[in-house]
Image (tube, rainbow, N blue to C red; front, side, top):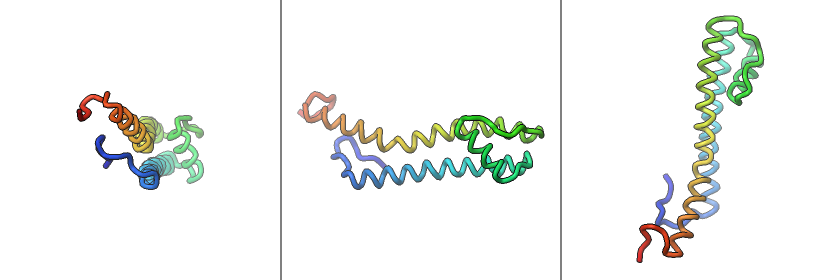
Length: 123
C-alpha cells in the first residue's frame, strides 16, 4: 500500500491522489456512521429526519445530543452510538492522516539514509 523505506519518495501528484483516496475512505466512513445515527434516531426515538440528522451529527462530532430522549430504546441507542461514534471519528482521522504521516516519516528516513547514519544503511 505504501512504498518501502528503501524506495524513493512518491511523486507529488501520486501523493495527492493517495491523500484524496484515503480522504474519500475517511469521508465514506463518517457518512456511513452518520447514516446509522440518522436511522437509529428516526426509527427508535421517532425524531424527524432533520432532527435525527442534527442529533447524529452532534454526537458524531463529540458535542452530545440536542433533543431530549423519551424512549428506553432511544436512550440505549444513543449510548451505544456515542461510543461507536468516538471510535469511528478516531479511525477516520487515522485513515485520513496515514498517508501524510507516512510521507513525513519516509522523507525523514531518506534524509537519515543520505548521511549514512541511519540504522541498517548500506555501507
